[in-house]
Length: 489
Image 1: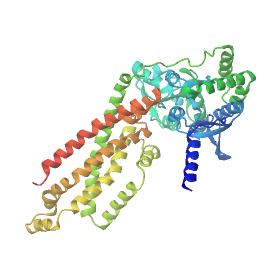
Image 2: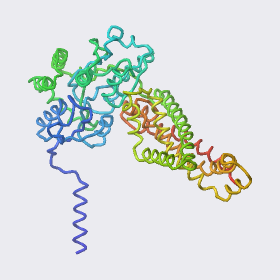
Image 3: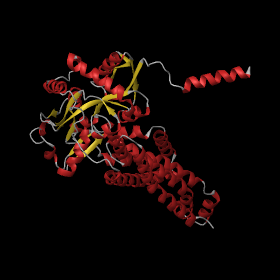
Image 4: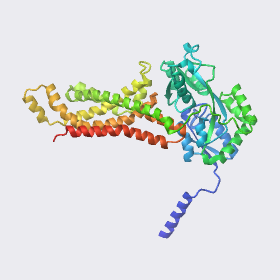
């Protein structure tokens, strides 16, 4: 019996470990449905399905390969690395062709040509036509894109202020609300945003040209070559043109580009780099260092706000009347019971109709208000830990409640609260990475941009971790030194 069981297990393990000799009938592909139409979006009629011109391109590839397409949802910034991990065979979702991508992955024929265009408010249509016209102005775009690198170049050359977003909705709403002066993004995204959020103008000029591609693992060049052959066939018989017409992205520029692709038997059009730049560690260190400074500044300012508010809340809950205690308890429970990410969104975007806070200020206030709730609990516990006999002794000596608080209760409570305060500050330092959702480019966001550009998280991740440690370890040592100095001997 045991021998049979062992044999069954061995066969099962062998079946799992060895690759199947049968050819796969499924073409797994990755994309980000959050990016929306016309690339990839959830079908409104059946949200379990996706649609878009990238979806139709994959379906065309799958038909040509004799397979069935299977969609895998993945964050846009992680598509390339998921391909390399083997999570799926290819990735599409408006992926931009760029030199770094070609160094690390197998990249398909560039099947679509897009233009980087400026969107401005109607009153600014005669003022802003190029990036050079926007010196000192805030220009929004998506992080880790060709447009973002164009803005970094314009920052050095013309003094443009790049503002990075994680989605392509808020750059345009912030443009209308006056938080930014222009938006630089692909014309496909800009035209989609104009339908969704009218009120701005897309300038007719082209800032730069780029191409969308599909990405494969470097080891999977055979599949890439097969996909290229199918794409070329689609170019010749008009299948790709028909797809783009269905999704409203076909124009004279696209027709001319396809003609160039067809006449270029060597596929020269693929990968003409529009933006060049070194991707060495040293080239990114200044940006990472600046981002680390922003992280540290936000953390110190938010912690200062949290400590001041936390002391007030704790004192109110210990010394206040019933109504005050109930009000402050409600604040603590609400803040602790909701995600800080949600609070940041509400503070920055939700309240923008009433008060448009600058992103940096919103980050400090959001983190400060959140951590004030946690700090108040630390201080309240520390205040209540002081023996009542000491307080009674103070009253017996004729001290007022304020004198008892200042001379007896607060100094001892501070010693008790010091260690958890330090822990909270280190936690806040790490939570400051969340403020990237409201366009603040702090250390983690800058690292993500770095990692996306070079296609790997290994070196950027190590650098980022080292910087966080370099910032947090001295704080821990300082706290231990203070604890030792103030401890009762």
